[in-house]
Length: 444
Image (cartoon, rainbow, N blue to C red; front, top):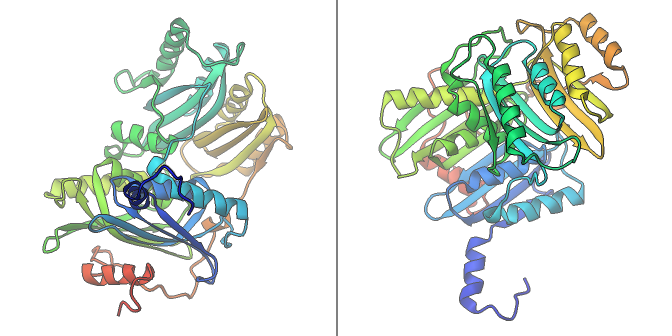
């Protein structure tokens, strides 16, 4: 590394100590790219590292996390969504640069846009009403994400003024937007909990959606529509002799699963000291040794149950319910209002959506079910496609990660029974992580 001439030896040492060291290896593992990170430990650095990987739409097949003392050492085995190693040098270089600067991480910049945060009670056609109001007020939706869970909805929408193409800074117009959207969110029976605010924070979008759902206490509510997804198996036990609480999670694997779990633990002010993560076929097993930020383990049964509920909710919010529809069309005012109105008129309920605009082209993803959460009738889907345009709206298969069957590969770690027994003793976990980090020759 070439150092600027004005740096003294102490300044060089500080840079070495605070700059993460990143190694990306395509030779050491037969079926995944191995990403190794070590750095001085600080609260939230694990989330920042996982966020970089998930923002690249990578699948984390295995992970070994160890951050006792003042140092943070992690290994991630990653693939693309088709289960292949990473071969694109531009992606590898970007990942290496991003991970190497996670101590200075910044959220995706939405300069030139105004951010609207919405929470309320979910119902059939709600998204259509929201986009209709924005279209009527001459507000252009540039990017948006919406999640639903347990009868609640959270959405972060980035908009600009249709006429000027600038952020919306007129306080009177913001007041009109807020009043009308609140009326839509309230409906007939959600006067207290419906919220609409203009956000100035630069928080990562998906982390912010988790925070909004958490603040809305969706984890305490019961589903109001039928879902076909399985309930994640989450258990919490205390390892008092070592001063840790041990969280075990067993559920269906999917992309961004580890991000959702780490995000929730971090925002609940827990610190992950050790962890082992693995995915075999379509099953994921995750084990975390955690403490409060003040160094103490979970102290009560009520706190344990709250952690379990919050982690289950975090996993379920992004579970892919329904048929995935992708819209690709020239962007124009009112497009989203028209598309979502067509969904509503045909009895399709939108459970999750991702809206983006790239070079004047709308690229949107919708997950839809029928009105009560059952799979949508294929005839209705085709009728909707005919109305919107067969070439514009397409039914997309989920990436192969969602369809993988369990293979015969035996994983290094044992699975846990329904009782939620601890997978590994703390000592063996630390030895195993040191082995996977390349610091010892054997962990047996």
